[in-house]
Length: 460
Image (cartoon, rainbow, N blue to C red; front, side, top):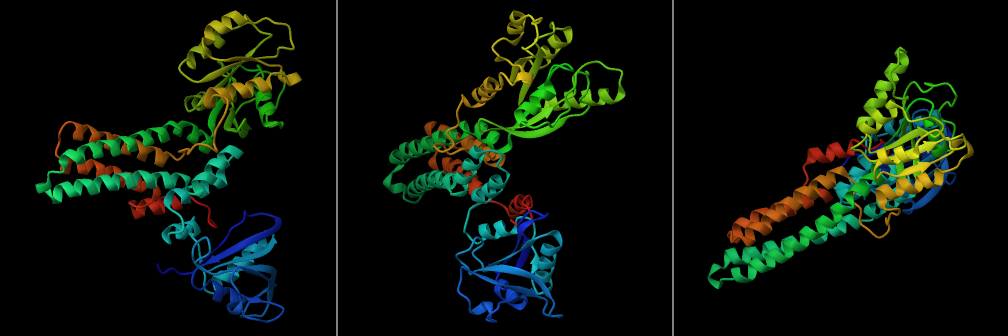
Protein backbone atom coordinates (compact mmCIF):
# COMPACT_ATOMS: atom_id res chain seq x y z
CA UNK A 1 0.00 0.00 0.00
CA UNK A 2 1.12 3.58 -0.71
CA UNK A 3 1.50 5.87 2.32
CA UNK A 4 2.79 9.36 2.92
CA UNK A 5 5.72 9.83 5.32
CA UNK A 6 4.87 10.27 9.00
CA UNK A 7 6.85 11.57 11.97
CA UNK A 8 6.34 11.60 15.75
CA UNK A 9 8.19 11.76 19.05
CA UNK A 10 8.70 8.16 20.18
CA UNK A 11 10.00 8.79 23.71
CA UNK A 12 8.13 10.23 26.73
CA UNK A 13 7.93 14.00 26.93
CA UNK A 14 10.09 15.59 29.60
CA UNK A 15 13.72 16.10 30.49
CA UNK A 16 16.07 13.20 29.83
CA UNK A 17 19.39 12.18 28.32
CA UNK A 18 18.01 11.57 24.83
CA UNK A 19 14.76 11.74 22.89
CA UNK A 20 13.87 10.05 19.61
CA UNK A 21 11.92 11.45 16.67
CA UNK A 22 10.89 8.70 14.26
CA UNK A 23 10.04 9.01 10.56
CA UNK A 24 8.52 6.25 8.43
CA UNK A 25 7.54 6.18 4.76
CA UNK A 26 8.87 6.32 1.22
CA UNK A 27 10.25 9.86 1.72
CA UNK A 28 11.74 9.31 5.20
CA UNK A 29 15.37 9.20 3.97
CA UNK A 30 14.83 12.09 1.52
CA UNK A 31 13.29 14.32 4.21
CA UNK A 32 16.04 13.46 6.69
CA UNK A 33 18.66 14.18 4.03
CA UNK A 34 17.27 17.72 3.60
CA UNK A 35 17.87 18.59 7.25
CA UNK A 36 20.86 16.41 8.26
CA UNK A 37 24.46 17.43 7.69
CA UNK A 38 27.28 15.02 8.52
CA UNK A 39 30.95 16.06 8.96
CA UNK A 40 31.87 14.27 5.71
CA UNK A 41 29.09 16.03 3.81
CA UNK A 42 27.83 12.83 2.15
CA UNK A 43 24.14 12.42 1.37
CA UNK A 44 22.08 9.97 3.45
CA UNK A 45 20.78 8.48 0.22
CA UNK A 46 24.25 6.99 -0.37
CA UNK A 47 24.52 5.45 3.11
CA UNK A 48 23.98 1.75 3.83
CA UNK A 49 20.87 0.53 5.61
CA UNK A 50 20.91 -0.14 9.34
CA UNK A 51 23.72 2.31 10.06
CA UNK A 52 23.99 5.20 12.51
CA UNK A 53 25.50 8.59 11.73
CA UNK A 54 26.69 11.61 13.72
CA UNK A 55 25.91 15.12 12.55
CA UNK A 56 23.75 18.23 12.94
CA UNK A 57 20.22 19.12 11.95
CA UNK A 58 20.17 22.33 9.92
CA UNK A 59 17.14 24.34 8.84
CA UNK A 60 17.51 24.45 5.02
CA UNK A 61 15.72 27.84 4.83
CA UNK A 62 17.97 29.70 7.28
CA UNK A 63 21.04 27.42 7.55
CA UNK A 64 20.56 27.62 11.32
CA UNK A 65 21.90 24.64 13.31
CA UNK A 66 18.93 23.21 15.22
CA UNK A 67 20.46 20.22 17.06
CA UNK A 68 23.42 17.88 17.38
CA UNK A 69 22.14 14.35 16.71
CA UNK A 70 22.79 10.69 16.03
CA UNK A 71 20.67 9.47 13.13
CA UNK A 72 19.73 5.81 12.55
CA UNK A 73 18.99 4.88 8.93
CA UNK A 74 16.94 1.73 8.21
CA UNK A 75 15.57 0.86 4.81
CA UNK A 76 12.47 -1.29 4.29
CA UNK A 77 11.37 -3.99 4.34
CA UNK A 78 13.64 -4.94 7.27
CA UNK A 79 12.07 -2.41 9.64
CA UNK A 80 9.19 -2.36 12.12
CA UNK A 81 6.81 -0.80 9.56
CA UNK A 82 8.41 -2.50 6.51
CA UNK A 83 8.96 1.04 5.19
CA UNK A 84 12.06 3.22 5.20
CA UNK A 85 12.56 4.38 8.79
CA UNK A 86 14.78 7.14 10.19
CA UNK A 87 15.20 7.65 13.93
CA UNK A 88 16.75 10.94 15.07
CA UNK A 89 18.37 10.74 18.51
CA UNK A 90 18.58 14.24 20.00
CA UNK A 91 18.95 15.78 23.45
CA UNK A 92 16.04 15.01 25.70
CA UNK A 93 14.74 18.48 26.54
CA UNK A 94 11.19 19.61 25.76
CA UNK A 95 12.31 22.44 23.49
CA UNK A 96 14.94 20.35 21.69
CA UNK A 97 12.71 17.44 20.70
CA UNK A 98 9.84 19.70 19.61
CA UNK A 99 12.20 21.70 17.36
CA UNK A 100 13.46 18.49 15.76
CA UNK A 101 9.91 17.25 15.13
CA UNK A 102 8.82 20.61 13.73
CA UNK A 103 11.80 20.63 11.36
CA UNK A 104 10.80 17.20 10.01
CA UNK A 105 7.18 18.32 9.59
CA UNK A 106 8.00 21.53 7.74
CA UNK A 107 10.19 19.59 5.31
CA UNK A 108 7.61 17.11 4.09
CA UNK A 109 6.56 14.74 6.87
CA UNK A 110 3.08 14.52 8.38
CA UNK A 111 2.43 14.18 12.12
CA UNK A 112 1.60 10.54 12.84
CA UNK A 113 -1.77 9.58 14.24
CA UNK A 114 -1.87 7.60 17.52
CA UNK A 115 -0.52 4.10 16.92
CA UNK A 116 0.11 4.74 13.21
CA UNK A 117 3.59 3.17 13.17
CA UNK A 118 2.19 -0.08 14.60
CA UNK A 119 -0.85 0.20 12.32
CA UNK A 120 1.47 0.35 9.30
CA UNK A 121 3.34 -2.71 10.58
CA UNK A 122 -0.02 -4.50 10.64
CA UNK A 123 -1.25 -3.24 7.27
CA UNK A 124 2.09 -4.10 5.65
CA UNK A 125 1.89 -7.66 6.96
CA UNK A 126 4.77 -7.59 9.43
CA UNK A 127 2.53 -8.41 12.40
CA UNK A 128 -1.09 -9.49 12.80
CA UNK A 129 -3.70 -7.70 14.89
CA UNK A 130 -3.18 -9.73 18.08
CA UNK A 131 0.56 -9.01 17.91
CA UNK A 132 -0.15 -5.31 17.38
CA UNK A 133 -2.36 -5.24 20.47
CA UNK A 134 0.40 -7.01 22.41
CA UNK A 135 2.69 -4.03 21.69
CA UNK A 136 0.44 -1.85 23.84
CA UNK A 137 0.18 -4.59 26.48
CA UNK A 138 3.98 -4.65 26.62
CA UNK A 139 4.15 -0.89 27.13
CA UNK A 140 1.51 -0.99 29.87
CA UNK A 141 2.79 -4.11 31.67
CA UNK A 142 2.95 -3.56 35.43
CA UNK A 143 4.86 -6.75 36.37
CA UNK A 144 7.51 -9.04 34.89
CA UNK A 145 4.93 -11.78 34.39
CA UNK A 146 2.54 -9.46 32.58
CA UNK A 147 5.45 -8.42 30.36
CA UNK A 148 6.32 -12.07 29.62
CA UNK A 149 2.73 -12.77 28.55
CA UNK A 150 2.77 -9.71 26.26
CA UNK A 151 6.15 -10.76 24.81
CA UNK A 152 4.80 -14.24 24.06
CA UNK A 153 1.78 -12.78 22.27
CA UNK A 154 3.92 -10.25 20.39
CA UNK A 155 6.15 -13.12 19.26
CA UNK A 156 3.09 -14.74 17.69
CA UNK A 157 2.33 -17.40 20.31
CA UNK A 158 -1.42 -16.76 20.25
CA UNK A 159 -1.40 -16.09 16.50
CA UNK A 160 0.13 -19.49 15.73
CA UNK A 161 -2.44 -21.30 17.87
CA UNK A 162 -5.34 -19.39 16.26
CA UNK A 163 -3.79 -20.17 12.86
CA UNK A 164 -3.76 -23.91 13.69
CA UNK A 165 -7.44 -23.79 14.70
CA UNK A 166 -8.43 -21.95 11.52
CA UNK A 167 -6.45 -24.43 9.39
CA UNK A 168 -8.30 -27.35 10.99
CA UNK A 169 -11.62 -25.67 10.20
CA UNK A 170 -10.47 -24.93 6.65
CA UNK A 171 -9.67 -28.61 6.10
CA UNK A 172 -13.13 -29.47 7.42
CA UNK A 173 -14.75 -26.98 5.04
CA UNK A 174 -12.78 -28.48 2.14
CA UNK A 175 -14.14 -31.91 3.06
CA UNK A 176 -17.67 -30.50 3.12
CA UNK A 177 -17.14 -28.93 -0.32
CA UNK A 178 -16.16 -32.32 -1.73
CA UNK A 179 -19.42 -33.74 -0.42
CA UNK A 180 -21.43 -30.88 -1.98
CA UNK A 181 -19.61 -30.86 -5.34
CA UNK A 182 -19.50 -34.64 -5.85
CA UNK A 183 -22.70 -36.02 -4.30
CA UNK A 184 -22.65 -39.04 -6.63
CA UNK A 185 -19.69 -40.47 -4.67
CA UNK A 186 -21.68 -40.42 -1.42
CA UNK A 187 -18.82 -39.22 0.79
CA UNK A 188 -21.13 -37.99 3.57
CA UNK A 189 -20.42 -41.06 5.70
CA UNK A 190 -16.77 -40.05 5.76
CA UNK A 191 -17.45 -36.30 5.99
CA UNK A 192 -19.56 -36.19 9.16
CA UNK A 193 -17.12 -38.12 11.44
CA UNK A 194 -14.21 -35.97 10.21
CA UNK A 195 -16.25 -32.80 10.73
CA UNK A 196 -17.21 -33.74 14.28
CA UNK A 197 -13.66 -34.81 15.13
CA UNK A 198 -12.02 -31.62 13.82
CA UNK A 199 -14.64 -29.32 15.31
CA UNK A 200 -14.43 -31.07 18.69
CA UNK A 201 -10.66 -30.57 18.70
CA UNK A 202 -11.14 -26.86 17.90
CA UNK A 203 -13.75 -26.53 20.64
CA UNK A 204 -11.47 -28.14 23.24
CA UNK A 205 -8.56 -25.88 22.30
CA UNK A 206 -10.81 -22.81 22.60
CA UNK A 207 -11.93 -23.99 26.05
CA UNK A 208 -8.28 -24.37 27.12
CA UNK A 209 -7.58 -20.79 26.02
CA UNK A 210 -10.62 -19.46 27.85
CA UNK A 211 -9.51 -21.23 31.03
CA UNK A 212 -6.46 -18.92 31.07
CA UNK A 213 -8.51 -15.81 30.32
CA UNK A 214 -9.31 -14.78 33.90
CA UNK A 215 -5.63 -14.98 34.89
CA UNK A 216 -4.54 -13.38 31.63
CA UNK A 217 -6.93 -10.47 32.08
CA UNK A 218 -5.65 -9.94 35.62
CA UNK A 219 -2.07 -9.87 34.35
CA UNK A 220 -3.02 -7.39 31.65
CA UNK A 221 -5.32 -5.03 33.54
CA UNK A 222 -4.49 -5.63 37.20
CA UNK A 223 -6.81 -6.54 40.04
CA UNK A 224 -8.96 -3.69 41.27
CA UNK A 225 -8.25 -4.08 44.98
CA UNK A 226 -10.06 -2.04 47.62
CA UNK A 227 -8.75 -1.67 51.18
CA UNK A 228 -11.86 -1.63 53.35
CA UNK A 229 -12.53 -1.08 57.02
CA UNK A 230 -13.62 1.31 59.74
CA UNK A 231 -11.55 4.45 60.31
CA UNK A 232 -8.19 4.05 62.06
CA UNK A 233 -7.80 0.27 61.63
CA UNK A 234 -4.63 0.65 59.52
CA UNK A 235 -5.88 0.90 55.94
CA UNK A 236 -3.43 3.63 54.95
CA UNK A 237 -0.60 1.79 56.72
CA UNK A 238 -1.43 -1.29 54.64
CA UNK A 239 -1.27 0.74 51.42
CA UNK A 240 2.10 2.18 52.44
CA UNK A 241 3.43 -1.28 53.35
CA UNK A 242 2.42 -2.84 50.02
CA UNK A 243 3.65 0.13 47.98
CA UNK A 244 6.76 0.42 50.20
CA UNK A 245 6.38 4.17 50.19
CA UNK A 246 4.51 6.71 52.34
CA UNK A 247 1.73 7.44 49.88
CA UNK A 248 -1.03 7.91 52.44
CA UNK A 249 -1.09 10.03 55.59
CA UNK A 250 -1.06 7.88 58.74
CA UNK A 251 -2.16 9.33 62.09
CA UNK A 252 -4.01 8.18 65.21
CA UNK A 253 -6.89 10.48 64.27
CA UNK A 254 -9.88 8.63 62.82
CA UNK A 255 -11.01 9.78 59.37
CA UNK A 256 -7.65 11.08 58.14
CA UNK A 257 -8.25 9.66 54.65
CA UNK A 258 -10.99 11.79 53.10
CA UNK A 259 -10.68 10.64 49.47
CA UNK A 260 -9.67 7.46 47.67
CA UNK A 261 -5.95 6.98 46.89
CA UNK A 262 -4.96 4.74 43.97
CA UNK A 263 -1.58 3.09 43.37
CA UNK A 264 -0.30 0.12 41.36
CA UNK A 265 1.68 -2.52 43.25
CA UNK A 266 3.28 -5.82 42.22
CA UNK A 267 2.40 -8.69 44.57
CA UNK A 268 4.12 -11.96 43.60
CA UNK A 269 3.72 -11.08 39.92
CA UNK A 270 0.07 -10.09 40.35
CA UNK A 271 -0.54 -6.41 39.50
CA UNK A 272 -2.90 -4.82 42.01
CA UNK A 273 -4.61 -1.52 41.33
CA UNK A 274 -4.73 -0.68 45.01
CA UNK A 275 -7.39 1.70 46.32
CA UNK A 276 -7.17 3.07 49.87
CA UNK A 277 -10.65 4.24 50.82
CA UNK A 278 -12.04 6.57 53.42
CA UNK A 279 -13.28 4.58 56.41
CA UNK A 280 -16.89 3.58 55.83
CA UNK A 281 -18.99 4.90 58.68
CA UNK A 282 -21.87 7.27 59.35
CA UNK A 283 -20.52 10.81 59.75
CA UNK A 284 -21.78 14.37 59.93
CA UNK A 285 -18.58 15.74 58.35
CA UNK A 286 -19.54 16.81 54.78
CA UNK A 287 -16.07 16.18 53.30
CA UNK A 288 -15.69 12.79 54.99
CA UNK A 289 -19.22 11.83 53.87
CA UNK A 290 -18.26 12.46 50.24
CA UNK A 291 -15.17 10.28 50.76
CA UNK A 292 -17.30 7.50 52.27
CA UNK A 293 -19.64 7.58 49.26
CA UNK A 294 -16.67 7.33 46.88
CA UNK A 295 -15.45 4.37 48.93
CA UNK A 296 -18.77 2.61 48.46
CA UNK A 297 -18.57 3.30 44.70
CA UNK A 298 -15.03 1.84 44.51
CA UNK A 299 -16.25 -1.19 46.42
CA UNK A 300 -18.89 -1.97 43.79
CA UNK A 301 -16.24 -2.25 41.03
CA UNK A 302 -13.64 -4.21 43.04
CA UNK A 303 -12.15 -7.60 42.11
CA UNK A 304 -10.64 -8.12 45.56
CA UNK A 305 -11.33 -6.66 49.02
CA UNK A 306 -8.67 -6.39 51.71
CA UNK A 307 -10.91 -6.06 54.78
CA UNK A 308 -8.96 -4.63 57.71
CA UNK A 309 -9.99 -5.16 61.35
CA UNK A 310 -8.38 -3.90 64.55
CA UNK A 311 -6.87 -6.60 66.81
CA UNK A 312 -7.06 -4.16 69.73
CA UNK A 313 -10.79 -3.39 69.30
CA UNK A 314 -13.88 -5.47 69.80
CA UNK A 315 -15.93 -6.22 66.70
CA UNK A 316 -18.61 -3.60 66.18
CA UNK A 317 -21.99 -3.70 64.50
CA UNK A 318 -20.37 -1.64 61.74
CA UNK A 319 -17.75 -4.38 61.16
CA UNK A 320 -20.50 -6.99 60.92
CA UNK A 321 -22.41 -4.84 58.41
CA UNK A 322 -19.24 -4.64 56.27
CA UNK A 323 -18.98 -8.45 56.39
CA UNK A 324 -22.53 -8.60 55.02
CA UNK A 325 -21.73 -6.01 52.32
CA UNK A 326 -18.83 -8.05 50.89
CA UNK A 327 -20.33 -11.48 51.48
CA UNK A 328 -20.52 -12.43 47.78
CA UNK A 329 -17.11 -10.96 46.87
CA UNK A 330 -13.53 -12.22 46.92
CA UNK A 331 -11.94 -10.88 50.08
CA UNK A 332 -9.17 -11.47 52.59
CA UNK A 333 -9.60 -10.47 56.23
CA UNK A 334 -6.60 -8.70 57.74
CA UNK A 335 -6.54 -8.44 61.52
CA UNK A 336 -4.07 -5.63 62.14
CA UNK A 337 -2.28 -4.19 65.20
CA UNK A 338 -1.30 -7.52 66.77
CA UNK A 339 1.41 -5.61 68.65
CA UNK A 340 -1.36 -4.25 70.92
CA UNK A 341 -3.35 -6.19 73.58
CA UNK A 342 -6.04 -8.39 72.04
CA UNK A 343 -9.68 -7.36 72.36
CA UNK A 344 -11.12 -8.84 69.15
CA UNK A 345 -12.89 -12.20 69.24
CA UNK A 346 -10.98 -14.15 66.56
CA UNK A 347 -13.36 -17.09 66.78
CA UNK A 348 -16.25 -14.80 65.86
CA UNK A 349 -14.17 -13.31 63.02
CA UNK A 350 -13.58 -16.83 61.64
CA UNK A 351 -17.28 -17.54 61.90
CA UNK A 352 -18.15 -14.38 59.93
CA UNK A 353 -15.39 -14.93 57.35
CA UNK A 354 -16.38 -18.53 56.65
CA UNK A 355 -13.95 -20.02 54.09
CA UNK A 356 -12.24 -16.69 53.38
CA UNK A 357 -8.58 -16.38 54.36
CA UNK A 358 -7.67 -14.51 57.58
CA UNK A 359 -4.20 -12.96 57.98
CA UNK A 360 -2.91 -11.33 61.16
CA UNK A 361 -0.50 -8.41 60.83
CA UNK A 362 1.36 -5.76 62.74
CA UNK A 363 2.00 -3.18 60.06
CA UNK A 364 3.81 -0.99 62.58
CA UNK A 365 6.37 -3.76 63.08
CA UNK A 366 6.15 -4.94 59.45
CA UNK A 367 4.85 -8.38 60.39
CA UNK A 368 2.44 -10.48 58.32
CA UNK A 369 2.98 -8.78 54.92
CA UNK A 370 4.61 -11.90 53.42
CA UNK A 371 1.65 -14.04 54.49
CA UNK A 372 -0.76 -11.50 53.01
CA UNK A 373 1.08 -11.49 49.66
CA UNK A 374 0.97 -15.31 49.60
CA UNK A 375 -2.77 -15.25 50.31
CA UNK A 376 -3.42 -12.82 47.43
CA UNK A 377 -1.38 -14.89 44.96
CA UNK A 378 -3.02 -18.14 46.12
CA UNK A 379 -6.53 -16.69 45.79
CA UNK A 380 -6.21 -15.93 42.07
CA UNK A 381 -3.35 -18.07 40.80
CA UNK A 382 -3.11 -20.95 43.26
CA UNK A 383 0.19 -19.43 44.33
CA UNK A 384 1.94 -19.47 40.96
CA UNK A 385 1.69 -18.23 37.40
CA UNK A 386 3.09 -20.30 34.55
CA UNK A 387 3.40 -17.40 32.14
CA UNK A 388 6.18 -19.10 30.23
CA UNK A 389 4.31 -22.37 29.71
CA UNK A 390 0.82 -21.26 28.76
CA UNK A 391 -0.69 -19.16 26.00
CA UNK A 392 -2.63 -16.63 28.04
CA UNK A 393 -5.60 -14.78 26.57
CA UNK A 394 -5.66 -11.40 28.28
CA UNK A 395 -7.44 -9.08 25.85
CA UNK A 396 -11.18 -8.53 26.46
CA UNK A 397 -11.81 -8.40 22.68
CA UNK A 398 -10.09 -11.76 22.18
CA UNK A 399 -11.99 -13.32 25.08
CA UNK A 400 -15.36 -12.19 23.69
CA UNK A 401 -14.51 -13.53 20.24
CA UNK A 402 -13.39 -16.89 21.66
CA UNK A 403 -16.71 -17.23 23.50
CA UNK A 404 -18.53 -16.56 20.20
CA UNK A 405 -16.34 -19.08 18.37
CA UNK A 406 -16.99 -21.71 21.04
CA UNK A 407 -20.75 -21.22 20.69
CA UNK A 408 -20.75 -21.49 16.88
CA UNK A 409 -18.47 -24.54 16.75
CA UNK A 410 -20.66 -26.27 19.36
CA UNK A 411 -23.68 -25.50 17.14
CA UNK A 412 -21.85 -27.10 14.21
CA UNK A 413 -21.06 -30.26 16.22
CA UNK A 414 -24.63 -30.59 17.51
CA UNK A 415 -26.09 -30.09 14.03
CA UNK A 416 -23.77 -32.69 12.48
CA UNK A 417 -24.61 -35.23 15.18
CA UNK A 418 -28.34 -34.57 14.72
CA UNK A 419 -28.13 -35.44 11.02
CA UNK A 420 -28.46 -31.92 9.62
CA UNK A 421 -27.17 -31.83 6.00
CA UNK A 422 -23.49 -30.97 5.84
CA UNK A 423 -24.05 -27.94 3.62
CA UNK A 424 -26.11 -26.42 6.46
CA UNK A 425 -23.48 -27.36 9.07
CA UNK A 426 -20.94 -25.62 6.86
CA UNK A 427 -22.48 -22.24 7.76
CA UNK A 428 -21.54 -22.58 11.46
CA UNK A 429 -18.06 -23.91 10.64
CA UNK A 430 -17.44 -20.97 8.29
CA UNK A 431 -18.67 -18.50 10.90
CA UNK A 432 -16.30 -20.00 13.50
CA UNK A 433 -13.42 -19.64 11.05
CA UNK A 434 -14.35 -15.98 10.46
CA UNK A 435 -14.66 -15.18 14.18
CA UNK A 436 -11.21 -16.64 14.90
CA UNK A 437 -9.91 -14.57 11.99
CA UNK A 438 -11.09 -11.40 13.74
CA UNK A 439 -8.63 -12.09 16.57
CA UNK A 440 -5.61 -11.92 14.28
CA UNK A 441 -7.12 -9.34 11.92
CA UNK A 442 -7.75 -11.51 8.84
CA UNK A 443 -11.50 -10.87 8.77
CA UNK A 444 -11.79 -7.65 10.76
CA UNK A 445 -13.50 -4.43 9.69
CA UNK A 446 -11.54 -1.24 8.98
CA UNK A 447 -13.52 0.75 11.58
CA UNK A 448 -12.39 -1.65 14.33
CA UNK A 449 -8.76 -1.41 13.19
CA UNK A 450 -8.93 2.40 13.38
CA UNK A 451 -10.52 2.26 16.82
CA UNK A 452 -7.91 -0.15 18.20
CA UNK A 453 -4.90 1.82 16.98
CA UNK A 454 -6.35 5.14 18.16
CA UNK A 455 -5.71 3.92 21.74
CA UNK A 456 -1.94 3.86 21.15
CA UNK A 457 0.42 6.70 22.00
CA UNK A 458 1.50 9.03 19.17
CA UNK A 459 5.00 7.70 18.53
CA UNK A 460 4.20 3.97 18.61
